[in-house]
Length: 67
Figure 1 (tube, rainbow, N blue to C red):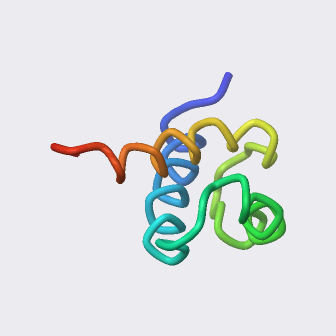
Figure 2: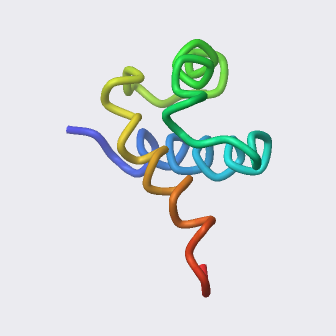
């Protein structure tokens, strides 16, 4: 049932968070990301557990050459 309107904010949150926590790993800051998701998600209907994989994917893409 989730749409781009739901997952888009999760991906955006991942890459924006990666820049903010550039010297840390996702696992190290996940609790902070989870805590702030409610504020960051906008109109997304996803819970953090639903959004986490999209956010992590975007986070990881920042570190890949050519992304």
